[in-house]
Image (tube, rainbow, N blue to C red; front, side, top):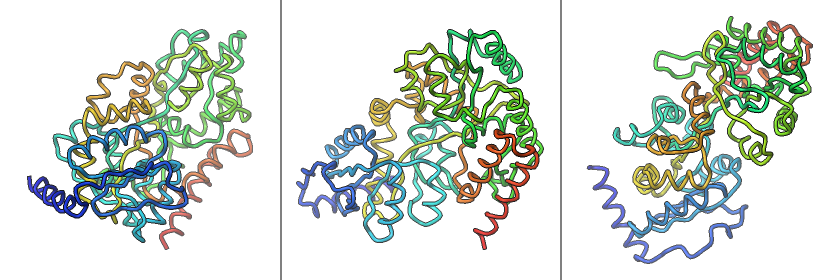
Length: 415
């Protein structure tokens, strides 16, 4: 109630300042990309990529209709939004809201660039807990999620009737369809790519970072050389030696094999759906089979964050809680770019079977660590995986060296 009263007072003040009639006439796409459209008192400014622009403009129209507050949307490449906020935010050239990925929050919140959100309990109950967890940093919610994604296992239904429940049986099936000439390759994970190998790491009991008592990722506990991680490395090494996995199969090669009907199974994410559907290859999606444990792939979440330097903090908060976190707002976003919804009421209504299947991987997964120390992980871990694929290093040594390099880099960054 107190928040509503404050918002009402702010709206009155803003309407007076804006002369009650400063509706935006300018086309947001006409703004030069080299010039930032900044937060201006009494006008809500949002930075978004082009794919979500129509949905955000539709939500903004409802906001403007109710409050007579104009909304500007500046379109820029998704990957540029974070960098531009770092440049523009501290000097007053940032927007009120950005659309971005959850793994940005460690850097942005740690540098004081995004503000915590207040989300009433009745609204929080409508979100996937994994998605909320992804946007929670140091115990504070710092973003409003609306989509989630994680890798799963695509399989060619002409080559494979169903995917076995266990990893061991899946590998046996992969070898058999190659041996009998049914497929050119049985199963693929893009070589050397650590993101795609997280399910293998966790499936055998490994981890990147441990957790502290509050459940936050602990950069002092690096698990790339933990017993489970070493077992995962040994399994990868075994499969490369057996010819199941190949150093020749990167993401592009795996995509080409699968979309031409030559690959039985492919572990990747929903971003591949468009190309697979266009190719017309018969397929289905399944969770990654059980290893020693249930594999926990990385979960990515995307959503909205509030610029800490916004001149309209309460307006930005209201836009999110009253217009985005609604059935209508989430439906607009889904219609613009279909995805696995973070909004549970919408997730319960979607009829896209592929997205329903991907949601099972999301439910099994862990948010990709958003702490700044994750930047120290990718190169060393990726190099270790590459060495195993290339058969240039014993898997235990490759992972132990990677873990030591990660610890050294984290220590260097902290000094």
